[in-house]
Length: 579
Image (cartoon, rainbow, N blue to C red; front, top):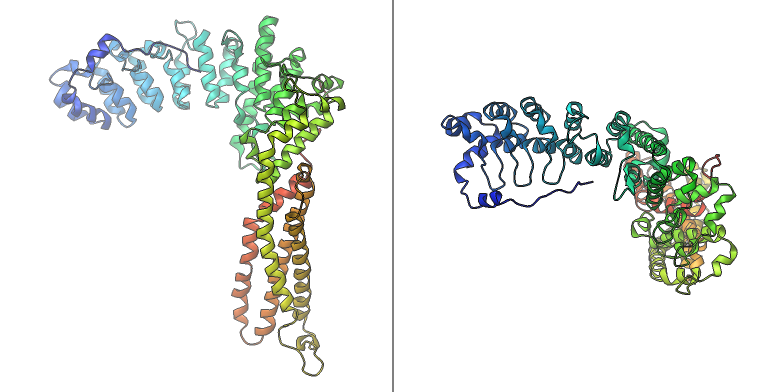
């Protein structure tokens, strides 16, 4: 959050633009590189006042330039020794002191040097009304932030622990995800947790309600990544950040009880609606637990938390209804100011960033149908036939909104089926021919395969795997042909088409695997007595097609199977009952 302030150029600043600063170029370069000898010899030795001179169009002094480098701190110490305390407070064209510049780049050592000589720098505002400590938070300079916090005082003018400056600091600290620092701040100065802005409607909790990356429920993990997240220690930092964010959110939520009820309700309502809109179910649940009176609040368009969760496709928030008492029907019957119910919300196309989490237009259409059908089960039966203010029933709206996605899903499904059909047809042809041209040939007398008469196990393996490859490739071909000839109705994308695609891909994978086993067996039969060394590299190369399929197509198979046969995105996730 930026606190507004004057950034207008003063008349004195305008005069600076007409000056010629070319003579200060050697000083600028010396400050940037930390070359004290050059600066002292050419400038400071002749005129000590040059240490405080403005040396460029940005109205920066040599100190502004030197602290930005990070490698000129020796230069900074000597330069500060030449300057008067008040000169350390000189501002550049952006209204920033050298301490603000040090905070930007995380130059803690330079900040120490300046504050030892002139402590009031801590409480000077830049052109945008920010303190240096807030600037350090804005630029995610944690070490400098901690240092500036440690030397700041609460009982002075422009303290970073009070009023608008205090809430601005807390919001910036939360924004750069330094939750441990934020927890320490609100623990020492609990008033910060209760301060608001935007006419008292917003507070630190409502800001956290928009921080999607800070909470585990908003991490876009795939199913196997969620499993790893629960079991491994390799992502310790991320898990620790999530825990700190939860702890901070709980603290901020508890502090609301110390505010007048009317003020607390306004802030909590805003926080809960924002959390629902951004899919942070942890904050929604906290507020529902501690302040159930605000649970059915609506925004300026009449949408409650479940409307916002549905329209933005956040199943983690909607799944809270499975943990509710019969009061969940307060949501199932709810409509916004345009008479849209939950089915209308899901009849609209999902936001692009949510659609893109699902691979392929066909599976995106499936996910949209899953949402629509879930809302159909949740709302009273009559709601599904009610029109909104535009006289559109949910099903009419769904068809209109998803016409393009349905066409893209049909094209995606047909393209996938066509490509896979070519592969299965080739496999069928090869393994069918191999069944009648067996390795070793056949007996001229009986017509039986020679290796079969010799009772060689590898030949039996060849026959079995070749047969399995043939049968599965033909089955796969039939599945893909059925996809190509499907009618492609909306509801077909829910189960029919994904099931055919998953079964077709599975049988294709099996067919490729067994075909390569049959090929390797044939190689062994032919070369087992003469060139055995030849078999190993051929078998290794033979595994490459399987590996390629696993890398390129198997993830799609997993996604289709998990989306169609998996546990689903809706359902009861805990054993507790609330609201």
